[in-house]
Image 1 (cartoon, helix red, strand yellow):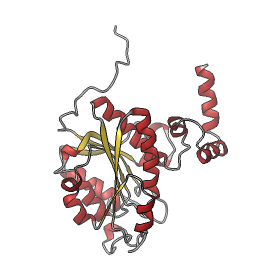
Image 2 (tube, one colour):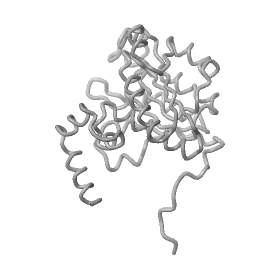
Image 3 (cartoon, one colour):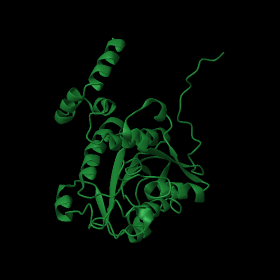
Image 4 (cartoon, one colour):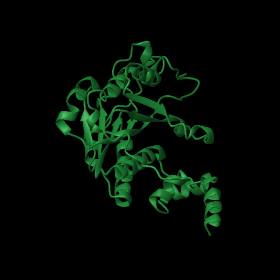
Length: 269
């Protein structure tokens, strides 16, 4: 029976039409739809789900998810839906925080911010409309230079287990990443992260010396105890773009970094 289920799952997964129907009408349990890739933002669901699993293994009851770059807010609305489902499955409460200027991208004039691709005012927000639609996510409105300074003091978030980086720019992403340095106690020992603007195409021409990739590289260069690494388990077996946009942030000096969360997968000799 298990073999038949696996075969059926592979057939459904390979059919875009069937996946579209499942996504549109929410057919089947949440994890089934996530594993199938039949969620609008599967990457959001994936990092939240796995962060919650890790938190549960480590004994946490609650975690937080951050989205840097909210725009019109469809990502936050998706997070609300997914985290409600995850809480039902795993019993882990999830707080959501969304950071945004509220007025779109700030002025772009540094080559590291790719002014040939981004422009001031892109991705503006209708704040009043979004606030009416949100149920539990908290909006942190303002320039990240300012909002990053008092966020932890003002909100005292549950340990952060998942982060969506969608600030687009090198300068903003750098500040967002640096929030981790002096606030290690507010994170899980390993944090599932998604970086939206590190692949692109022939127009963006993302590289390791500008944009989000540069911010990641500089952070790794300047910090010994916190490192941002690709999710290497995806790379050999996947042609799905977002798999290559997942990064795992390791807090090596975290008090629970060495806590055992695995299983014995081999037979004793």
